[in-house]
Image (cartoon, rainbow, N blue to C red; front, side, top):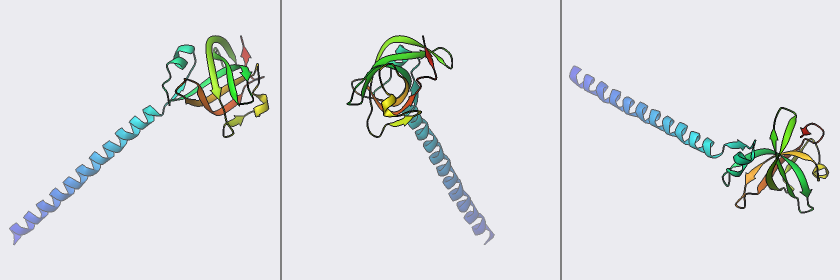
Length: 147
């Protein structure tokens, strides 16, 4: 009878060890998957033309642009600005095309502030044609200086 009890305890211990091992493996898999997902969804802060031009389709980017033209179709063209200090930006030669829509959030201004000569911070997604579909536009005109 005592031998049977010891055998049962070993079986129960084995079952618990298997369950604990499965929980550890499952936890490791979840951590690994979430790490991969976070890598794919990472935001690229484009501080220069090279960073911006190397952004992959579907990736989210953040950058500052000086608007050259803003059409009624909500298409914005301009030049990428490179941050020098917190308030000073330098012009680059990198062209930028941004498409906004009715769902694009406007911060620190309105759609009327998106006009030629304005400076805006754009958060959006890189499209096939390397244009940006804007999710958020922050109006920086008057708050930053462009050199």
